[in-house]
Length: 187
Image (cartoon, rainbow, N blue to C red):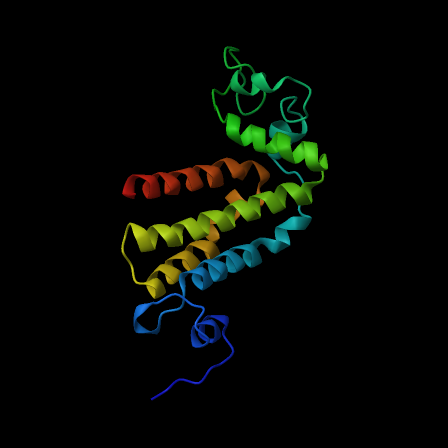
């Protein structure tokens, strides 16, 4: 029995010969990645209107490293909150890459929170696509199951704090580099 074309981009591209060769009628990998990324973005679009809250204020709004009031080299000497690592009051939470991304956000948009949230959402979408890629490459899941894995990861509410809270970017970046290390090790 032949299935009807319901207008899905994945089916139509395969019908005209532009999809990749997948077994068992699975959608092309690019379509899976695009769907996972779109779901990841759609789940958190409502965060774009959010403001700086809780830890965002000391880590971003009051952090001289973020506000470009210090040389870039101090990112390597200060903790996440802008306190020198040698200071007794330092939390010793060393995240210079995250602080650098905050600084880039600041240089591009000042303290306009929607851009900070948009960056977190984009990074979450990248992490979700990487989860899908790891599911395909490392776990050797079939494309349909890898898509389900990526979609569950994208929509799972456990990520709410990491994606919607601006300082949660540290967790999203950690996830991205963790997944990239799996892919690099796997080859």
